[in-house]
Image: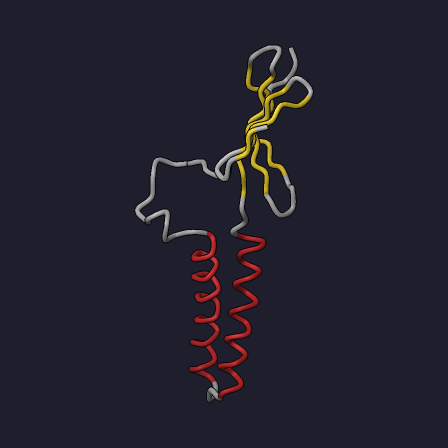
Length: 125
């Protein structure tokens, strides 16, 4: 078994299994990959929700310290929830049939839950 921080490769039951968290689904992005990551996206989302709540509250009631503290706590909770459930880490998993020398399946695997979304499955013929 070969293990690197960028991929893992293992052989099991006549199959070669390749997994990597580094894959590109589109041609590119205008945002730099090093800056725009899962944590930053979670922070922006939590900030947008808290900012919207702040705007509604600020126009309707007089803001006191307790409201600001509540918004900060709400931001921290939302950041964790967005990171855990919305912007999850995922890996691309490719399974190759060692006997037939063909790709058997391609799927996305979410690291925290182990949930697998099959992109395609090659059926036996």
